Length: 470
Length: 105
Image (cartoon, rainbow over all chains, first blue to last red; front, top):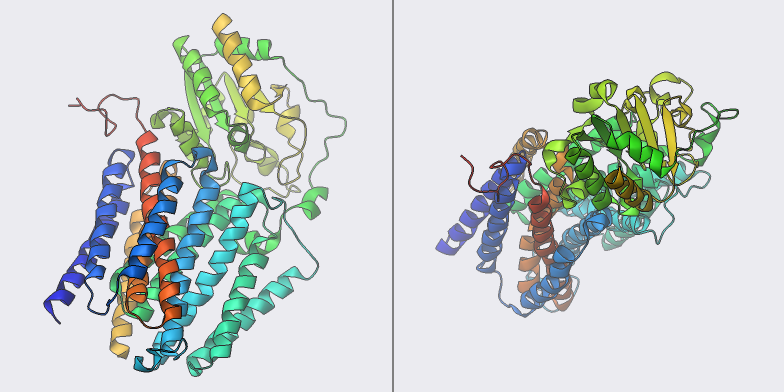
């Protein structure tokens, strides 16, 4: 091992340590920022350590890539608004997977003697190497198109509702089995280039067909799962090119995405399989109680403001509707006013509120709500009994008591916020349309519930005005 | 040769465990920053991309390497910046608790 190699390896080791310490720092909001700066330093070390590798003989392509990537990445980091975070994350999974896949394809073409010129210099692929390369390309490619589909649904240039057709699951499973078969064949016969390209295409198709049938509200699981896949693809790259820092960073990313997807599935009381193959949507609407004969009681902004202005304890439950109306700043203003008048305001956050893990927390943090006011479901669920007013802003399924009481309901068993236990409940909603799951919500018809219809931002601004005047 | 792969498998499994134990302790409050952070970290595949782009394997490989470097750089630069932007927003209302508050005991 030359001195240069030693230096490169040292930089990789340092980077790995920085990454782990950085993630460790993320366990507390006070240390998180410092930790991620450390991780960024680790990344820089690894890049510099790689640039001195002896195999690198020319720098023009590298420089061009760095310049283009920096020019695109900088505005993506500084300009994208917090409300666009879910699609921003989805698109970054796509870039990550694209990088890993392209490295895999380039390595394969090199070893398989494709691409002419210097091809003769490469030795043939060994079986373990082919297994890793194949895995990398398979998972990378399906993450590319899967993330793109998720991005499309979140950015709303693709319909957010599940897109299904008859026999979909059969097609998906067959495509997956086919791709895995090609992978196994490649391990046996690494020089079968046709199988490599066929596997690549199959994986791209699988990514599309797996995400299409998954609806908007299930996006937190999909986005976390794609996070995990992007990590696994990076790890496989490490195996293929014999690079330990890649193996480690990929394993960390894979573990993180995996944990998040489990947390999200649990919060919806659904198995992984159910989210991926269930296409919860139109067909489920028939079950559950119907709301016929029940009347929701509307409330005016003035009356709602009176309740809030004189309340001692208020719990605000934000949902995707708050994100859609971009009303987090108005929410904060309202909370400040109530507190100024001597009330206490807490925010109750369901793990799957919004379109990605932690979505509501980020929006509220952007609006300067201190994080000590944001409570997880377990922390706050027994505090609703003592609350004077629970204000629900654009949330539906996560506050549906049917999940606890109605065995016939499709969401039965899903942990929900005990909003109905508050003395008064005000639900802010655009209209009476059912939530994503297509289920009626008994909460809206409860005796202590009043409905405040209208756009969340407009209504909140009115509330702020009324509370000020009260 | 096979021994190297076994060793890498050890590294992978152990790193997976470390990741599991560290990340289960990340509070739901920070799940979005966690996601964007791990995304930025997994852009370490830039290391593989740099080698492909600079090794003069063939024109095809160089072009693929160039695109891979660009994609990975997008995630490195954009990912770390946006994670920091997000984390900067998380403030405590207890004085002296948040990172930039200063003046704490």
